[in-house]
Every structure is written in C-alpha cells, then in structure tokens.
Image 1 (tube, rainbow, N blue to C red):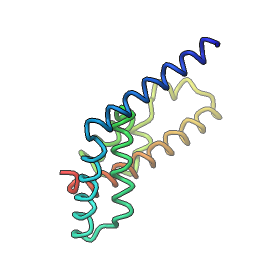
Image 2 (cartoon, rainbow, N blue to C red; image 1 turned 90 degrees about the vertical axis):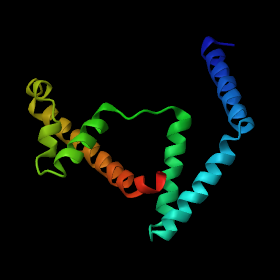
Image 3 (cartoon, helix red, strand yellow; image 1 turned 45 degrees about the horizontal axis):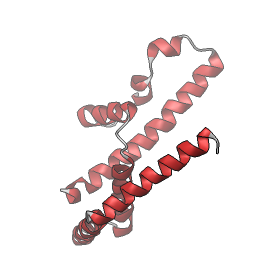
Length: 136
C-alpha cells in the first residue's frame, strides 16, 4: 500500500470517527430541530423557505468542514457594512502593488478574477443579511 493510500485511509477513518461522534452526540437531531425552527420563522416572515433551507444547510456544511471566512470576503463584508455598495468596489479591492507588476493581459485576468470574487461575496453577504435575523 502506498503512502498516499495510507494517508487517505487514515483521513477516511478520522472522518468516519468524527461522523460517528456527531451522530452519538445528537448533532444531527439538534440541527434538524434548528432547521425546522428557522424554516418556520422564514415562512412566518414570508421568506422563501427553499432559499432559507439552502442557506442554513450551507452553514451546517461549513461548520462540519471547519471552514472559516476568507480574508477577501471579510474585506468585502466590511466595505459593504461601512460604505454600502459602491461603484468603485473592484478598484478598492485591488492590490495596487501587485497590480502594478502585471502585464496588460495579466491585469485583465486579475480584474476579472476580482470582479467574479466580489460578485460571489456580494451574493453571500446579501444572503447572510436576509437570513441573519432567522439564525438568532
């Protein structure tokens, strides 16, 4: 057995242990109760239940995977909270020093990349704002 297979097997075992621990501790039962309550609150407030369900499912998935907010998203969130949606968001999020070192084509790709990441972050921020009240 190669070292990679051994590492994958070990990782699979660790993940299986974590999953078993979640089941034994009642993690899923609690999440199911939380989800039902949040969907009920969404229904009462006239929000889209399906959309709320997807949002809260993604939250649980991120919790299980141990994902943390990336630095870019935190920058976008701070900008949106303090200044709202601004017309020069891409310029504000651009790393000026890095941008200055790029060729014309690289600048175009970098700007497109920042734009795509900003749009994803903006969509996430809007979803968080919409369902933040329900999560509390």
